[in-house]
Amino acid sequence: MEEDLKFEGISPMGEELLRAFRLFRKADWRQKPVAGYKPSEIMALICIGNKSDSAGCGMQVSELSRLLRVTSPTVTQLIKGMENDGLVERNMDQSDRRAVRVTLTDKGAAIMEQSLAVFKTSFEGLVDYLGEEDSRKLTELLGRVFSYFQERVFEPAEPEHKGDAE
Image (cartoon, rainbow, N blue to C red; front, side, top):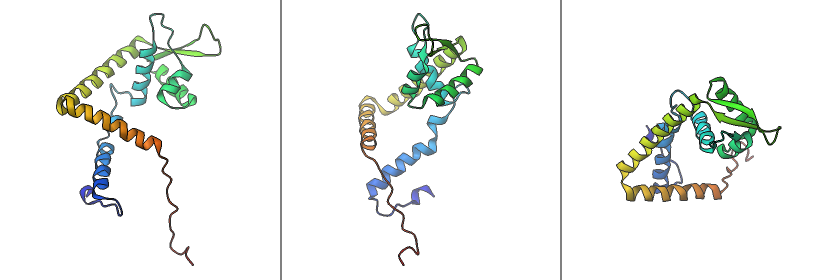
């Protein structure tokens, strides 16, 4: 049973934090598809949609790669699938023939809007549930947690194997 799981050498407060983090993993809230599309596709649509201007220039693959924090080949595969689904179009960059720009199709823009509505409802609901003050505290604490883990490199200790001590 999850509540009975103990981690030797961790303080009670450390165990409580670990349990709280494990709840998020178990909830799988980030992995739920919106309108049948994967979270990576939704995030790409939002990035492309936010970048698109009235001229409809779209976004370069390298810029999308940077925003999503994944490699360009990964983004290229993602875009190919989204293009096959009719969500995006790829066009040559007018100022740099070597570059490709990605724009949303009408279908892609509709899925992006639907996804943004789901996000808005979810997070505004969370603010209503927690209240303004606790939402601010949570935001600050999550930022600090992120900084803590970003600033530290955790390398596993060498495992001790039975029989190695001879």
